Length: 395
Ligand code: PEP
Ligand code: CO
Image 1 (cartoon, rainbow, N blue to C red):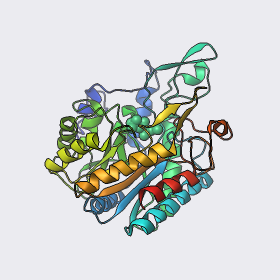
Image 2 (cartoon, protein in one colour):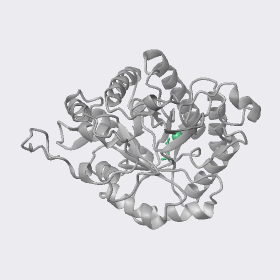
Image 3 (spheres, rainbow, N blue to C red):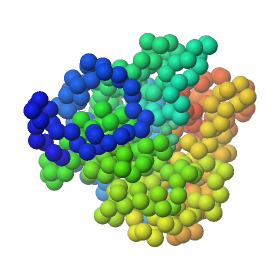
Image 4 (cartoon, rainbow, N blue to C red):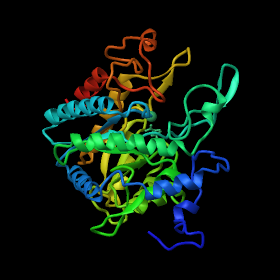
């Protein structure tokens, strides 16, 4: 990290601060932005370099076929649900589900929450119509607020400090719940560059830069372009990093990403999270896996069997079918095992409460979706649905 000072006294911008970035908030020329960035730059690190190194070693065990991963949590965390009670309930579900995977696979399971920073969402459209008015979409509590009115939807950089404080509370609770090297660890999509870039710190032991906003940052399907800000940023970090891979990615593109994100071909460094959709046949998934394997990258392979399977009901409710998730995760497992590789585990959107957002298991039909639909963004599996998925995939 270049720490030389500019004439204004601020650190010189890093390359990724100067590169174009997709899916960024439109703060306008908000006068508070420089001060917020400065505050984040000097704020206490939310994670230690030592913990980040420990998780990286655990993920190397997964890459080598000796352990598994379970990554669960909200699509969009709610900044108002970051207290001890909510965090404990989420960590408890994660632990219970991880035990279930362990029992069925005979492997220890690394527990990672989509928690403690999962406050920013990429969106396919910048606006939506609510009550006949065009409004900017909700982009996560780090950017704006979900209420359907113009002031709530305005992008406010001060929200980054609220997200930081909420994350700090969650990270403290996760640290307190950590009984061994298997977790619980924190993860989120590294999306808003104004939030993430100032939270780079140095590992006091190795001198390497690491991202102190989380243990395990990942980049999404919409921000994984080599040469743009997000990929170059993740490439510079010592953390273990993840990247979502959807059905539009070609084997060549994925290998190129591996070259940038895992130049040293190090087990545990890179996790590829496949979210191909249940309609993508094994014959289309296999070439991606084969290409990465052929290029010598010992990645961790995870299946996210939800993001490629979002559908809308006739009345416009966003949902997912458990049967689609099971089908996609089974295809994932089959492709990996046929190539002699290790299906590392699952990346899921879950709720600790008995929500009715996805179809299947106890949610018997579309009529039941309205009973308890609470997600701020994508539909999550409830605990019973998550158990059913795990039982079907690891049988
Ligand atoms: C997500 O994980 O919530 C997400 C937006 O995923 P993807 O980038 O795979 O669409
Ligand atoms: Co989501």
